[in-house]
Image 1 (tube, one colour):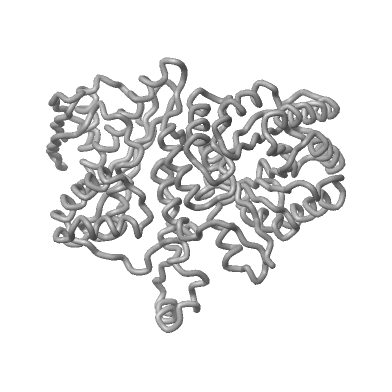
Image 2: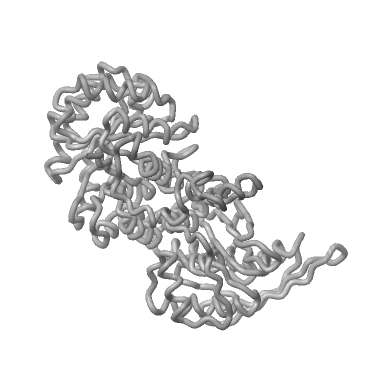
Length: 513
């Protein structure tokens, strides 16, 4: 009988700590709902004491998402733990996750505390968290660089205080699979009471070993792995959920371990996180990259056509990716479109379906065939739209190698049409200057990227922009067969989010996106 490994997803907490990424409450809730459909065991919804926005997001997830355990992070400090419990109070299955650093370098230079003081804080924090919830996780930050004997004492202290989960983080991605496996075995053999708790690992990817280290820990007997969708997170990121889950599913013969994850929801979840964070998935990314199930070499193509398993060790269907893409056109009906959305994993209201269908028909008038990727781009282009102060009504651009680029833009501004024109260094620059004249905003454009969603001359272009306002980063996204229009839509989307954040955050800095 295979062991069941618990999957602790920290996309909404550690994943959101990726440089340049910040999700608003609505976006966090949308991802949390999808994580519930993915059937992860634990959703770490955020770090409530970090900001009013994070507190609000954790509370919203705790109220609305059922099924998984909902966890909140807290330092080993009374105020953090109180705030975490306040946010988690509505959850049906709450978990407080408290942590403190245990390595010599962290204790000396960051905490400026002696080991004895750290032990006192561990005991006090876990006891305090336990007074609120029966499920308490304790993490020894930088465990892989900690003294093993001290780490043993730390974990015994946490168990005695009431911890139900012990987490061993490779906080800076320092360890190797063999070293990590040895550490896990040492802890299992030497920590008094460890058989009565769940042992967990949380691996970072600084040396590209996060997934390998997590799998080595599973081999050594841990019962929970902490990971993120697409491996996003601090610095080089975290262990990628999809890679761990599919490694266990594909090599069950070797690991003799399984998860409860609904693998057919993996691709859909990956796309959602990529869209809402503005972090594109690299083309050759394992499991969810565009090339993960693509074959170009003639020998490979011949082999797959004769017998799929010659070059594919898992099926695209197993992660929710359609093997053959259904092509819809302008004569396709609303019902067929709605059914295709369901097959692609989208759960939309009737109003959202109707809006998406209108965009689909408009696109179908421009393109002969509309593929699944086009449909995904249409739907995802609507994700995370803040209350719209501005919306695009008209855009005309004149540009050429011997012409001064000029853009005329007409926007709805709080329901009224306003038009402006501007010149620039190029068509996009001119468009953005015209938009700035209408909005009256002067923002710093931190990043601009464009990619083709589908192939062909009539491909949809997807533009992602990041703007900075008073230290906050806001991500906007736009899709269109016209890359200038996509650029305008992305910029307007980011500005709307910025203004929405300002409206919400009169009480303090809000989470941006």
